[in-house]
Length: 616
Ligand code: AGP
Image 1 (spheres, rainbow, N blue to C red):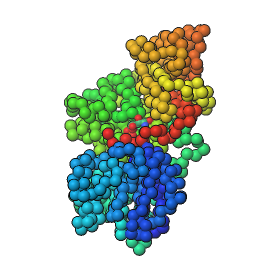
Image 2: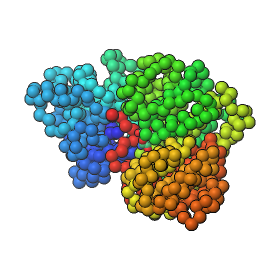
Image 3: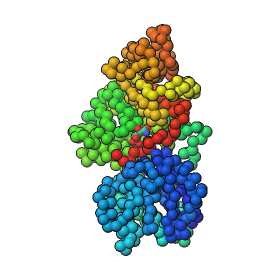
Image 4: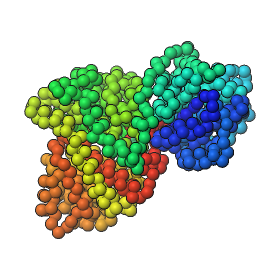
């Protein structure tokens, strides 16, 4: 949610601020703005509702001068999507951009209003602006004013400030939301992530919780001072980032999402090979560091990451005989869960910043149970808090709808299942080898599937105009049906529900008529015959049925549904049931993508969605 960028340079920064915001668009936003110090003394700003193009056009008509500035993409929390509520907030003393929520803003606002402060927006951020400027009026230096303000505000946030009459000072603060500094000899940058800074810096420094950084560029020399939560000067490690503009380019693809779908053979392979040796099947660190003494597993996540965890429940229980619970983080943290000290907790998050997953992790840690994080961003808050981190090796995922991160999460969980099964000797060595080989082989099976993506474009022409769709699956592929329905909802705005096929007669069958597309996952596995009966039940009720199955499955369907054709029977390459979730995910991603494409929605930045959900 919300993106922050800040630059101190010796040349005009407004174009680069806009460029940085462009790379933060993927996080999700509904308005944007930039502010600079005009003439080195007074704050000037431009803000616009809606897409960044509106702000870019505004700055084109009415340019902003200045060698220091901050910029922001806002995902509205407090106050409507209006220019007035867009950041930067500014008065004549300070300008600030903010990601997160100031929880005690209402009380603070009342107190500030009583003191005579006039509020011009409905945002919680404006409280921060007034607190800082009031402190400066009382004689505090800008740094002391920010420090003082952070002792008053409560919540999780990232902030960046510039100050009138301080053309060489930018202050950034982190508490709960990530901020990264970009460092060169004569310019300094701050961003919500390293992607924002990709073209300008190789050296970055991630702020720690509670840090305040004072960035200055004087006489062409940059300097960074970082204070920790107790006000002591600290050194944070500088590291080299490998995120380049190439690694975040769309290439020849129409959308990031399509590019990321097509990257999956590589990303799954990279992820599996980071964990297990193909030569001798030995496991690499960090899998070797996983505790071995636990009775059961609890997996906690949100959204798509939750569905990856749901598949793992089937894997871990069937092949490693480990009782596994899957928990939605926002429910788990507010229930009264029972902690027995014998549970291994796995947190799954692409961004590593999802507030509910992070809070659930902190809760579990406070109960002294072991924690593992499966994340795509190793510097993220969830990665920093977990006892052990396993990284999905997919590079930045820019499309808001998660695709390659999901299949890499599945790849890690499948590998973990193989590890647990080996440790506990729950499957025979031959069977183990068979599953291991199918996991290693799955990227090439997916490549084969991706060669025929025109079939999904065809199917999309039949469903892009519908209002609702049902997805059915059984066993390991029931969570994939849930994920398929979520993908369609997210990017095409078609209402879609995933159900276990066996639940059909317990309610959802009432929805079936000739307008309802039903997408059925029917690999030729131990549940196939039951799913085939469900297919017949919905066909005779007139639904438009699309089935994903194997060649053998398609033959059986053709035999048994004579005279009532499905809208489509898509034949997928054969694999064993262990790896079907990885394979059957991909057609659902393509179907969602081409449906949204046919409908003309904003595939990479669907309305109202944010890439990392950093507020509740
Ligand atoms: C995925 O397509 C969604 N945008 C969303 O459900 C996402 O998976 C969820 O918000 C969790 O995010 P995380 O993996 O970054 O924690």
